[in-house]
Image 1: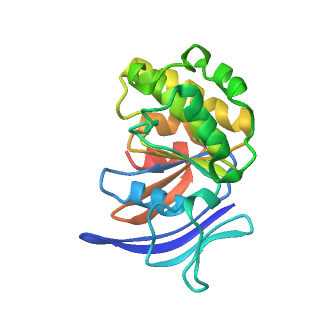
Image 2: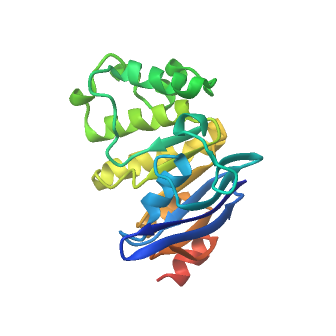
Length: 224
């Protein structure tokens, strides 16, 4: 279970989120642009520090302002997929994936060759990111996030730069992750279609606060 209770000032409003995620599958963090979803995700991953609060996964504290705990990102075991892909341009796809395997000194869930087969990127392993299409690049970034994960994966608007055909293709790959690799996913989006296809649970965030949460179908219906 992921337990979060944090606060941070964000321009015209404050991020004040208290939340527990127990679902082992995919939980969608849904809301309009500027609601604080991405900042919240970066706080969980250790890429951005809250002003106070506590973040814990299972029995391990990632952040606890009262006890002075603030683990760096590489010690949180969180795989992170950005919307910009962020593959290292000077590395081949193989070396990008290999970097994910050793980040933080953790034992990966599988090997580069195995995950390359799952995501259809075996023919791309020797290529540099600049030579990849948008869909190929995002599949490689997705595979790297899985290899870097130990506890769960965060995806921040991963389909926003793709056309509809590529979105549908990548959604199919994302659906495979919990059953194949066992990692829960926190999926950030403002697309109701993506929530309904992927998520079991949805958390609606508006102006830095959790407005409501529940089953994805119920939340999308109530937010219509």
